[in-house]
Length: 47
Image (cartoon, rainbow, N blue to C red):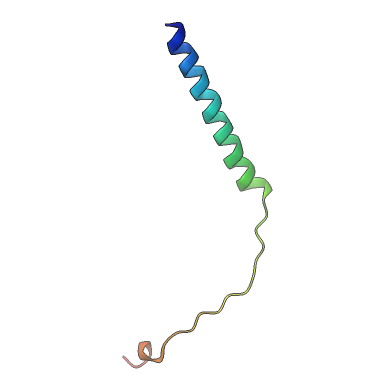
């Protein structure tokens, strides 16, 4: 039983660390917007 509790605590700590990293990436990192251009072939307009 103690090894099961130790495993669950370890998995909970790893899960909490992963959750914290994902939260910080989602809320603290700002993306850099940039312009984008896509060339569309003429065959798509000829239909």
